[in-house]
Amino acid sequence: MGVVGAGRVGSALAAALQLAGHRPVAASGVSDSSVRRAAALLPDVPLVAPAQVLERADLVLLTVPDDALPGLVEGLVETGAVRPGQLLVHTSGRYGTKVLDPALRAGALPLALHPAMTFTGTAVDVQRLAGCSFGVTAPDELRLAAEALVIEMGGEPEWIAEEARPLYHAALALGANHLVTLVAESMELLRDAGVAAPDRMLGPLLGAALDNALRSGDAALTGPVARGDAGTVAAHVAELRKHAPQTVAGYLAMARATADRALAHGLLKPELAEDLLGVLAGGVTAPGGPDGPRGGTTDGEGA
Image 1 (cartoon, rainbow, N blue to C red):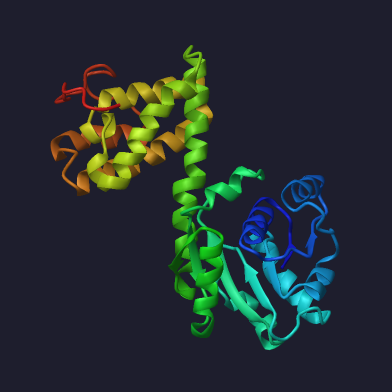
Image 2: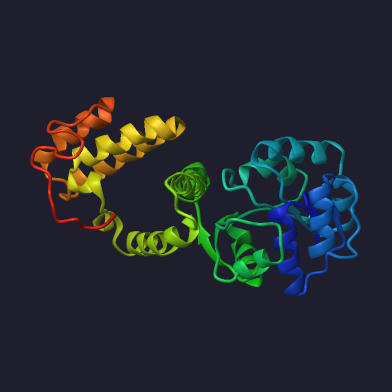
């Protein structure tokens, strides 16, 4: 086994495969962080050039950024580094196996195995692979090989059609990457409001919200947008403009999306939606003032 790109993902997957009995023989990585990661997760594995990794390994993990993958594959093929019968596994969420077509024509066996997980670059990543779903795309004749590799790493294969890979990856980015941004902004605002331990305050709330969303979908929507509390939302926008103007655009965009979903699922009453959508359209104060929109509810449900 070899790794081209000993970053957070590559080092963790290689370490997991090593635990399953595969023998790492070479890795490539040039940044200081990659060298440190490889030393920690793949001790005694030599760091060499990408072509030398392919020269030494029968199974090669291509764990480079999405935009770098096509050029890497073409370069390896042009230099004659790809061998017939060699398993080439990339971990890009965006691409299926077509990005490996140049290597396929050179006789390689292409697999796309994308772990639906966020990585820290530490040994904890290997443990997190237990039960992790992998977005898998592979030729029919290699499905069993793809499934076996995922299971050996402790994961669960989820088959993704070639043409669905960009949509699949967009869904994961929307849910996971944007979540980090939202949580980080929320923590900053809580600190500005005087909360000493925003992580402790948010932990139970966000944990419950995530659990409810996974269980119930849109039925889990709560808060002032879903209730139609236009005055509260207007007050939020005013405060954000004053204290954190960089968050206003994101707040309004997410609030509009929440309002649309709440309306579609009958959670937001149409008679309350007009004032709310007016606030979201222009960030204006709702009729009745920020503390008293007409027709607002008083049930106080949720955050």
